[in-house]
Amino acid sequence: MSTAIDLAEVPLRQLNQVLHDAESGGFDVLNPRGAHAVACGITTNVTVEVAGSVGYYCAGMHQVGTVVVNGNSGPGLAENIMSGTVRTTGNASMSAAATGCGGLVVIEGDAGARCGISMKGVDIVVGGSIGHMGAFMAQAGNLVVLGDAGADLGDSIYEAVLYVRGEVESLGSDCVEKEMRPEHLAAVRHLLQAADMTASPADFRRYGSERQMYSFHVDDIDAELAEGAGAVK
Amino acid sequence: MCGIVGLFLKTPTHREDLGRLTADMIHEVRDRGRDSAGVATFGSGDNATTRITVLADGPQPDWNATATALEALLAAEVSVRPLHDHAVFETTGDGRAARQWLIDHMADIEVLSYGSQIELYKSVGDPDLLATRYGLATRTGTHAVAHTRMATESAVTANGSHPFSTGSDTCLVHNGSLSNHNQLRLRLEQRGESFQTLNDSEVAAGYVSWRLGSGDSLEQALQRALTDLDGFYTFAIGTVDGFAILRDPISCKPAVVAETDDWVAMSSEYRAIARLPGVADAEVWEPEPARVYTWSLAA
Image 1: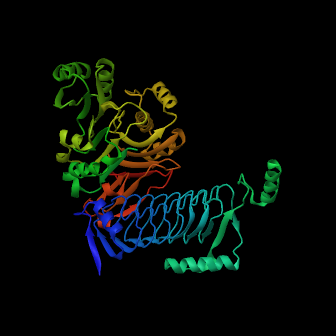
Image 2 (image 1 turned 60 degrees about the vertical axis):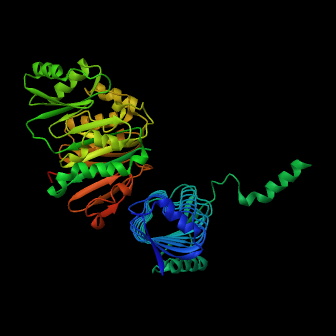
Image 3 (image 1 turned 90 degrees about the vertical axis):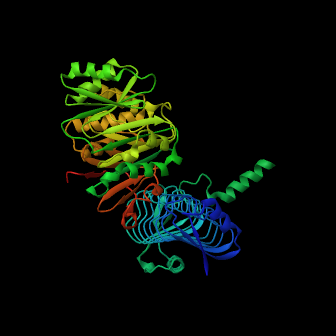
């Protein structure tokens, strides 16, 4: 039995306070009408279903629990998500899952520009296509795209892993295609399963960092340490 | 930041409600800028008459004397309808000539727009106040564009508010900032365009008017704008019978579009669209970077 909260009658802050105060349980958010910051900062294992489209920063700073938007989501969906699950059944605007540190973000439709920008460990699964500059400066985590990717995918990428089934318009600086080894097929299979999406892992290509743009080269770590040790003497 | 909205009514269904729907949309984006606001509506005029909307930010001039002076210039009847700090002149004479005369001879007023279909109002202060003061909710017509401003490129004054219009029945609202507007302003002035502010967005409006005046279609004018304008922008543009959206290739500035059989609406934020009639069945999408979107009543 879930609790219904109607945003046509209840102010946004009151909604978020109720969600913050709850230890568990289900909540249905009615009449979101593009409101910003719906279900932000959830820290307990609640399940929130939003009946309609939301504006900016829905489920931002999401720590645990599940938020499902039955509609489209505006810019910054699940920005800085730490863990838990956020899903939108429609499209997401720009900067979806930006800087996300963990958890799972599922976008059943398309995502706009800069999807997964600066992602730091979040897993993102997009049922449709993503816009330009996806995974810009992406540091860790996985981005799975069942459709196409726009221009400059993975520009200045660090160690995040990108899987795209469709066409990639162009790759950004220091992003290259890499071999799909068995562990990558397994990873895609796992992520699709978690996102409740059906596709064949073998149809995906993997993209990641060529590691030519790091100012700190991991391969040089022994030399760096040796130099440092020498300087102390 | 700034908020922009545009509403283009493809069918007559909601044309009696154009102003009310636009006022509701403006209300939803007032959090994006409350320095000032402006709105242009199209489609309530008749083709034989040119309307010239002007703004006097300070002391109000003798509007009747101004109308008499315009009659002498245009050799045509000129009526005038004051509305707070605005006035709307109506004439069968040459609107472009009237605009230039007013700019050259009336230092204390701004010419906001001219054309057979456009009326344009702008003011400093809360966007809802603008809607109330100029009776937006009662306006009818085919399309409207409006703006709530958080100023970055020029002073917070009524004449620095959007929409900007320099050519007949053409206006533009802008979220963003242009970086080559000074150079472009000079080029356009050399080609006969005239400007009344130092605002970057007025230059964009002047650019579009210049291209349309040079024979480009709205589509062609905006394709060329992608080459000639440098900076960040999401534009919504209204013409006598058309509506357009353009975003720069990076598209940092937000935009969302919804379309039904009856209307096209765009805004910086979905919440401005969320209450429009029939929105539940609308197709909703984000305009792609560097892609020209146009709609026409003529089509």
